[in-house]
Length: 257
Ligand SMILES: NC(=O)C1=CN([C@@H]2O[C@H](COP(=O)(O)OP(=O)(O)OC[C@H]3O[C@@H](n4cnc5c(N)ncnc54)[C@H](O)[C@@H]3O)[C@@H](O)[C@H]2O)C=CC1
Ligand SMILES: CCCCC/C=C\C=C\C(=O)C/C=C\C/C=C\CCCC(=O)O
Image 1 (cartoon, rainbow, N blue to C red):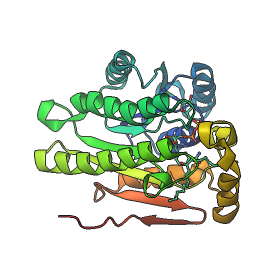
Image 2: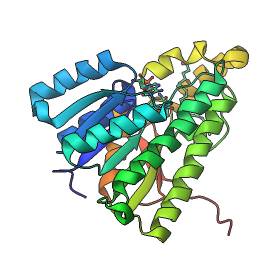
Image 3: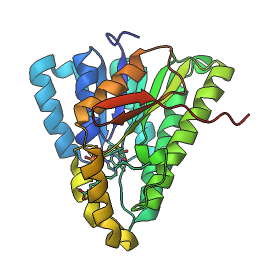
C-alpha cells in the first residue's frame, strides 16, 4: 500500500511513539490528522512538519479518546478535510496503576471507541474505501508484567481485540486490515514517569529498572518503522510485530481451534 494520497488518523500523536508514527507517515506521503489531548505539543509538531512538508499535510484536532463525542467529531473533520480515512493508528495510551480505571478507559475503551467509529468511515460495505488500522499494544500484552497488572491486562485486551477484528473484517469483507505493534521499553515520557505511576505496586519499581537494564530500550522511530511495515504490507492482517532492542519478529500465537 503506497501512502501517497492516503489519509491517516493517529491518536496520542503529539509525543513519544505517536509523534514518531506521525512523522514517518507524513515522510512517506500520507496526510495525517494529529489527535491528542495535548493540543500545545500537537501544534508544535505540526509547525515543525509544516516547514518540511507544507501546511496541507497535517491537521491538529484536540481529542480525548475517552470521549465518543470528541472522537466522532475528529473523524468527521478528518474525512471532510482530507476526503476520507484510509489509516488509523490507535496509539494513545497511559500507564497508571494508581488510576487503573482511567488506564482501562483510555487503553481499552478508547481503542474500541475509535475503531468502531472509524469503521463507519472506512468499511467498504458502508461506502468507505477500506484501509488498515494499527494498534499500539506492548510486549506487556503478550506476557505478564508484574509491576503493572492492569496496564498489562489492557494491552492483552488490545491484542485480543486486534486479532478478533482482523478475522471479523476478513470474513465480513470490510476491506480493512487490523494489526498491532508490541514494543518493549521505549524512550518516551511514559517510561520517564513509570516509577511514579505504579500505585500499590510502587515497591516493585526497581524490578522495572532491572528489566530495562537487561532488555535495553528502543527509540520511538524504530517502533514507527514497524508500524509503517504493518500499514504498507498488504499481506499483514491480524499480525503482531514484537519490537525488542535491536530485534523485531512476528508473534506466533498458540493454535486453539
Ligand atoms: N514507552 C514505552 O515503553 C511503551 C509504550 N507503549 C504504548 O505506546 C503508546 C504511546 O506511548 P508513549 O509514546 O510511550 O507515551 P507518551 O506518554 O510519551 O505519549 C502518549 C501520548 O498520548 C496522549 N494521550 C494520553 N491520553 C490521551 C487521551 N485520553 N486521548 C488522546 N491522547 C492521549 C498524550 O498526550 C501523549 O501525547 C501507549 O499506548 C503505550 O502504552 C507500548 C510499549 C512500550
Ligand atoms: C512479557 C514481559 C513483559 C515485559 C514488558 C516489557 C515492556 C513493556 C513496556 C511498556 O509497555 C511500557 C511499560 C513501562 C514503561 C517503560 C519503562 C520502565 C522504566 C523503568 C525505570 O527505568 O524506572
